Image 1 (cartoon, one colour):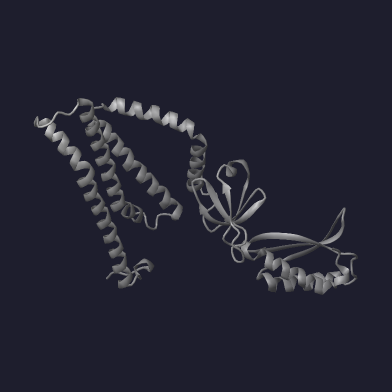
Image 2 (tube, rainbow, N blue to C red):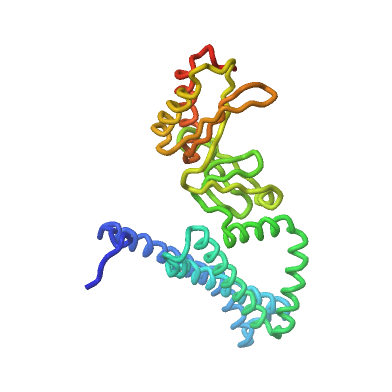
Amino acid sequence: MSVKGPLDKRSPIETLNKVRVKTKSIGRILNRLILLFIFVIFPMVMVIGADDRGLIEVPEIVKSFLNTFITILLSYTMATILLKLTVDLFSNSFEGTGGPEEKILLSKIYVAFIYSLATVIIFWQLGTNIENIFLSISLVATGFAFAIRNIILSYFIWLILLTKKPFKIGDYIKVGDEEGLVKHIGLFYVVIDPHPSTFDDYFKIPNKVFLEKPINNYGKGKFFSEFDLYVKEVPSSLNSMLLSMRENGKTITGSDAAFTLDSDCDGVMINVVYKAQYAEKDIIKDRILSMMIEELGVNAVRS
């Protein structure tokens, strides 16, 4: 007896709609292929065939160009069709083996492999031997890499972020002075949202920044935060107040919070350390501050 997991809860209507969308997509691809063959490839093939039978005379350079163009067009067209039909199957075959970042990476590698294979086939069909093919590809790749070295650097940093996983989508991180929820890990930017529950004010951090600045990953759970509240004078009942603050702080945060008397060159202060999720840390801080001001009295707090 088979047991269906969460992914099997799709309704029959949803499954049917997905099949219909896929069928329409395949139909559009086939229609475009037919039009391409009728209006572009077929006339070229007819011209070459007529020349071979002596019906018309086509200059050799034109005939060579037509053969080359047909080979390139057919190879990349078939590669595109193959990708349209198989890229989803390829990505879905890794279901459960990683997050969305890994699936994106594998899909892009698969696309690059298919188009690279099509390019090699084109050179081979044009009569170039394998050694010259790889030599030409190496020379072109070297020059191209030098021209877009910044893009390539960003791409390799993207690979590092996906494979080494210093953070994932959904983690709360801090890089330099910027912090927030990771919304997207892209080829050139990582999208960070500092206020995911209140404002749509996300920003983009270039990938190269993650090599230049340290990364603090707060994860998806609670982490320690702290702040200081300066007081004008130490009340005589401070110890009982601190005990009361700790009990109230436990109620606010859902875990232990530390309230410690301390001082520095600016004066006497109460240092507060508490645990909270990133999205709630400012809200909890405001609640703790309100509770402390109520305990101490407004006049006892120094702005």
